[in-house]
Length: 198
Image 1: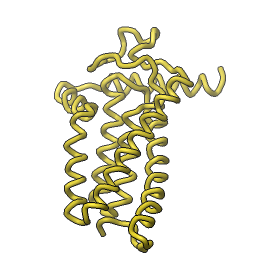
Image 2: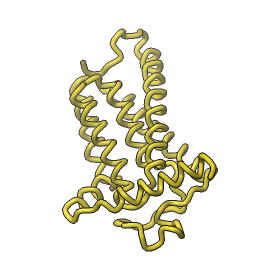
Image 3: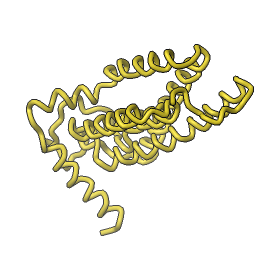
Image 4: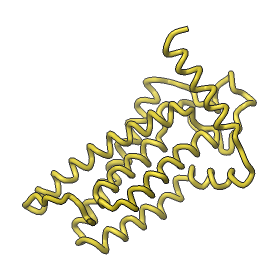
């Protein structure tokens, strides 16, 4: 057995453990976290918070980078999915009838997870912009719960989620650096504190 096969095997076993750990009261909760439409409430809340702390231009720049970050992570995941071609557990012949699937089976491939990449990219970018510890703690917990929900509802293996989270974190950091650079150009000076809220 190769190293890759060993890792994949462990990933499958861990998926079955996590996906099989269900509770009736938890099913609808995890489905809410897994639902992208629900995220809009959070995104709007963050924008309102930013608008109360800074001017319109800064808020619009932050909004542009939020959208850009999620777009980049989403497109990168789609590209990797096609290149790697790893079947979702919901499409795996070996797991047919075993997966506890709470949603539709989704697209054919699942590595890496778009949800995990998108939420962690957004979490890292906004937490670095806001520089607010309570917000950072809350948004990271939220991102982790969204990512876990993808395993719970039967759409992704743990490795899919970890790869997506890593991609999102890297994208979030990169986009923040670009945000600082663009803001420096727009406002004509480099503020020592690259934060909308301290």
